Length: 116
Length: 110
Image (cartoon, rainbow over all chains, first blue to last red; front, side, top):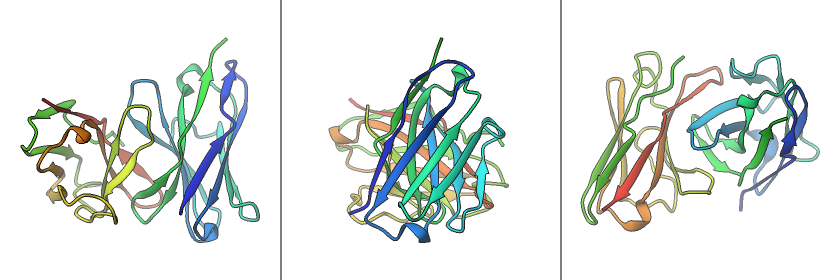
């Protein structure tokens, strides 16, 4: 059974940093890309960052230069390092496994709140 | 790239069918057969219900079906049930690891 377990969310001040983790199990982690998707309160889904199986990373324009996605295949874990956080980054952050053009499994999400 | 366009809400009575549209452009929805749909109940994570425009993952009811015509994809829910009341999002993969999401549609069962 595929499981994705996010952690690391919390309250942070504007300009601060936070690192999210997503521990994966139930599939061959090294064979798949992984993605972070966020959802601001009462809003829709927004893809944030994705990392390919070989480790190439891509970020949405809204977070480029501030967020970094990376993976540790020895721990079956993908991370999202978030720096220079803004109020607009407040959201539930989901980790998702990339199928091919779809996201076939999602974690339960972790809430990030950016506030003074 | 702009988000895909979905209606804010649709509604139907139990047993009826509803269809949700997802409009993009010739550079995303119209260009590739990588449209997927996600169901999200309140407070829960999204769940994949349609991928590659028309395919259903194992375990997803055949009351959910997908289609595409030109730059618009559609999700149809047949035999509407109370459990179908949720938010639905479309997504299009635009190659080179870029995805677009729709704004979401709230389905209400009357």
